[in-house]
Length: 205
Image 1: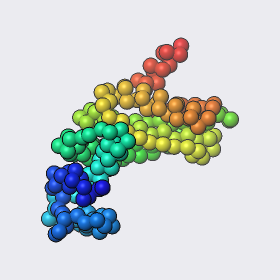
Image 2 (image 1 turned 45 degrees about the vertical axis):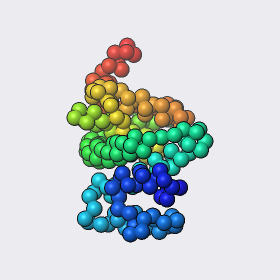
Image 3 (image 1 turned 90 degrees about the horizontal axis):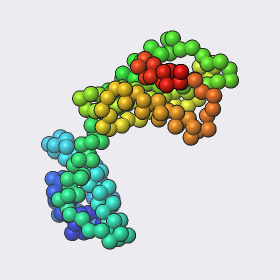
């Protein structure tokens, strides 16, 4: 289903990933070993190496759509979606790495001047980094008790963020929603974005 049926064979051919000498066989293990081996092939272009997990994933998804929902699909469109999803995923990883570095720097600054919340309250520090060029961002929040012990933390990224203020607001609302889902109450929020803090303060006065 993943390698030897007619449609998967077309998709693999369009992916430019090199076949075995006699083509893919019936053994999933042998075929998978070939894919992983080719990832170490220095002569093979990096973009082709990175593509094969998405080829497998989209073949599986389309097979399920066909059998359970009777939906047919066009191999050219599938290949276009594979390429787009792959590029977006690796772009997100690159942006996340950049955001991690900046968030780590900001986190160090926060820790140096971190002030504990009054007992029995908890404190949640939130931070965000926005890339105007890529219109992507990275979010992070960390929850501590009055002794500074980390209780919960999380991070994520979003696409299509159009401004720094939108980025900061979405980060804060995401942190609040996350803590609500964990059943956390009595929380003091702290953010490094002075514009966001000022806007919220004006709304509450």
